[in-house]
Picture 1 (cartoon, rainbow over the protein chains, first blue to last red):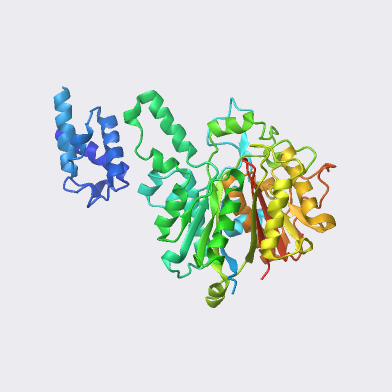
Picture 2: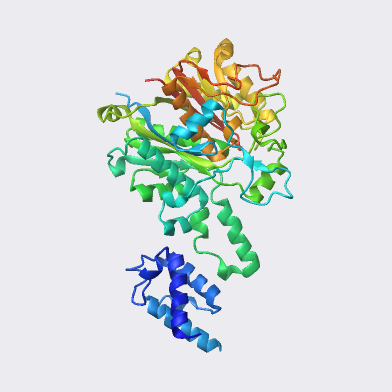
Length: 83
Length: 408
């Protein structure tokens, strides 16, 4: 998957799960501070990302994600690692 | 000096209407809210009707993120609380002196069923982190507090079909006893699911009558069970002097509350109605009123053969000869049985009967049953002054709650 397509997919999943408009979920947006995500939201969002993109994200790696861009990077690494 | 408690806001989310006016219009006109089930496929079910909430959008009351993170039971509860608050003209209150008692009989069952399916089909690591906070029965009361910012006592009493009768009673006590000045009290229920429908049907508790509008027939000789329904009802209870001082519309006074147990059987009422008698007597005693003062009883009146006969006996034991002069109606004939939300709906009905001088009818009452021989206000609303009304709620578990409401 090309990077722009992946970015769009991750932003879409996060927007849906965090109850945000797609435009608000920029790559720079911080999950907790800007998108008001709490720890339960993050677990749910990761479940949705795993589902949507067919990857497995271990809990400890998920905890390090602070921004949308980091989420895209992590998913991207998992996809490449899997291929 | 005793603190008196009054009802200043009513917020029904019911099968016969969302918000006070449509709700009351339909009850007085006897228009049924019972229809074919649309929430799931009833092909294999012996019962295919229910009182569903239709035309309800939780986004009118909660932001979209909260809508996703909350069960339907919380959607209804928050809607009912906000409707009631608006009906009370959104009074200024001290948050820590504002209590929330929002009960439920069961809790977030549809969430539990959906996540159990996820567990079985896809494994434990796919289960939503929102399962527990969505299914717990006290979630609706918590969400009402979060949405409205009230930090006073916050509880959920889970006594099946008596749950919100107890909620109104306990909310009244918080204010009377000086613990709070205002209380949002009522209940919510959202269990029109395949699992609960099957369970209630297996108990033989549900009517098998396929004729939706005529299936709930409290006190009629041909009654054969209740109609499952969903929804919520929250009342704004307020200390009398502060309600007067702000010029609030006062529907009625909550004059007394009685609670008891049958200590008999987990689902069947004690046939003589002894537990119900104790609760009605306790409510009258708390209100400092004699049995002869009662004008109207909004019956528990579920339309099951056992309840309606036992409740009739209980009313006769409690009121003696006066029982035959009292108007008794069951609005479950048009709303169906909202389980843990029923008591909140029906306390609201009593307050409105007092306020408007109109008693809503028991619909579908056609054939008298010798065991049920009171004035059930059959099929047509009645204009009558109601000075003192009782709202009866009796739960599986043998738990009984009776709230007495008085004209003021």
